[in-house]
Image (cartoon, rainbow, N blue to C red; front, side, top):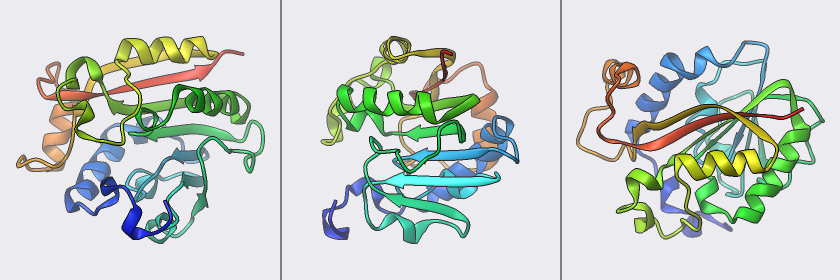
Length: 213
């Protein structure tokens, strides 16, 4: 993307996102990330996830040149493709997060990302993927014209395994498909949704995986 006029509409500001990601950090991700970790956010967009993270080192990557202006102080921004992670030292990253990213790139590029992450992740490092689950969101999946590949929680898990990762957690209905709804984004409701055994509107999946050593 070359300028603000050509950027993806998903980069448009939505005030609900700050409340949603603040609650997700508090009620879920803070339990996975230690204060001494190095965290990498791939395809970070407006930095909704990485800006909430509390960690020793925070790194964000996106192809949109405008994203660094949205990062909190202390977050390292790298403008470029997620398939080029050469700037990272081997074994230096403890937690990698990719939200609504891999459905926007080809399987070949996804495989390139995974090959690099196998080198860049630390011995205890893991990858967490959050994105639409075609198994539940097939009606709306291609309403986003930038979607180029299809994954369900089953196929994504198999893809990760085929490229040298061990899948350690699968949540087929982790979140609703979008925050752009009439429902309030109150933190207590998000906590209740995350802890409920029923997720009737859940169309985004979450998978966690680590490289096979």
